[in-house]
Image (cartoon, rainbow, N blue to C red; front, top):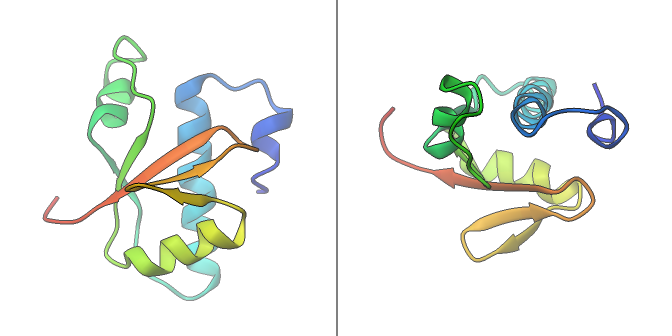
Length: 100
């Protein structure tokens, strides 16, 4: 699974977010992490409602935020405020802490 596939496949907004989470999970596993990215917030509602609710960003809960941030930065994501943005893939992610 390669992140550039997001650009070449005709994915809906929510499909793109699911693909991204699967990609991030794969990258985390590749470095031996057992942390799982969990979609929360508006994008979780978007998924649950089948797209009837729209959210621009992805709120992601993960135990090891710094590891996930390192992976995103390696692939060109840039920190903008509290979000990580990729213009190339048109993805906006925020890592949240707390309890799920």
